[in-house]
Image (cartoon, rainbow over all chains, first blue to last red; front, side, top):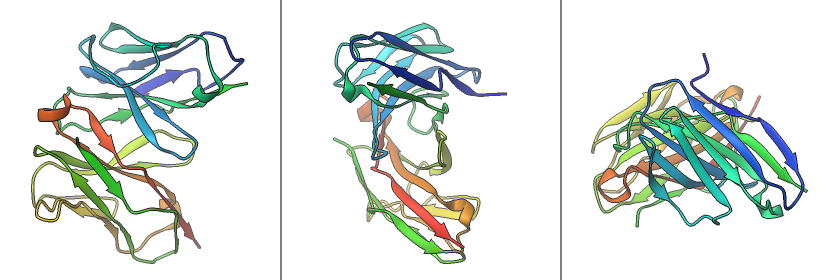
Length: 114
Length: 114
């Protein structure tokens, strides 16, 4: 049973296109996150939702828009893709936003923009 | 704001060698501390955690102690194996100042050679 799943695993697209990445967790967690990991493995948080409410919105271009239809799903839509968007995107979840709870990560989506 | 500083990598060790990866943090509150491990091609997974001063987290032979006086959470293992080759991330989470956002270090790549 996959705890946090993401689709697709790989995404290759051209500059200017719009794409979406989907994330689902079956852990019953209240909080979900999106992270971006660059080629040097640096991990940067992008967004966090708690019970479908946006609680963290880091400095991210407004071409990136998260959507949480319910607390088990957090999707990421990216408009007008740029070369610099190429990275691995990870979804994660935690029981809630309290600091003692660890995060569970999905397997990642490798986005390549050509 | 909160920050995490990890020992720079990459680190290369021979099998059965002793491992230390240093991690120090800056936080305004009383954070929980975590070590995550990322195996090649996978998402991050929790290795161990400590939620208050002097707590020791341990898992799979790895240990780290929450040292408030030195603001450190160094990761140690007495005898590494080839299968420990991965990227290791130190992280903190402080609900009082960051709404549950975790702050990650830059990651340390460990390669263990037979």
